[in-house]
Image (cartoon, rainbow, N blue to C red; front, side, top):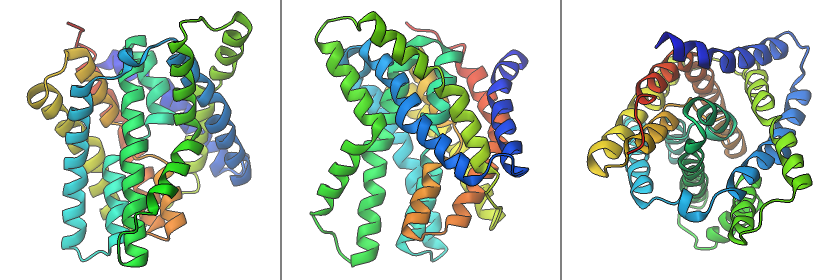
Length: 312
């Protein structure tokens, strides 16, 4: 377990470095925003394109994996929703709290860290988890916010969702990569070298950006932040484990990968959604900060556990 902790420590050390740079003002909020854009639109997209261009859809798609991750994620989403409603929160706040409880930082933290620590075989399952989060749960919150705003469901919202998905560079890069893979033609050497070089900036850039963005987060409603962090770091991986091991049995390695992905801290883009919809952004800010700090220990524990899961 100590060995796993020491392997994950450099990732969190880069996050801490970014946090220090943001906290001291050396890295301004504007600089953090531009670094985040670079990682999101260029470096991470290049990494995902290279990964998917070397895989086929069959290498990524696994119906049982989708069922297991969806079941575990929907379950914790439901728990957070019920608790929020019992506290008489409105639809907007309830939806954003549920998003905190269920959506982890798979893109910026999960893809680079899990592939490095669990091996390249983790690429397919991690990308599938990322796709589920983006397509299913990002769409769900748009629908819920639309209902909260208009008081009813409007089918036209699906057009907005579709446009948003098409414009998402992570989805676009995966689709383009799989499309290239389908041709059966290897990436030309200059192209492969280009996306490899650009993609190499994704890991340090994303981790530094996470830390720098945390520097501006507050800890308002700390008790809610602790509850949502518990949902994300403990309940979510536990429920995904139940689904992946017993309800929809996967091969041990794939089960381990999605359990580890479920153990990631609250995603930073939930804060952007909260700001956009005016739904308790300070509460989300605190949940991201608290869950990321605690995950230094919890993620190491989960990865240490699942690293013993081997492919059949």
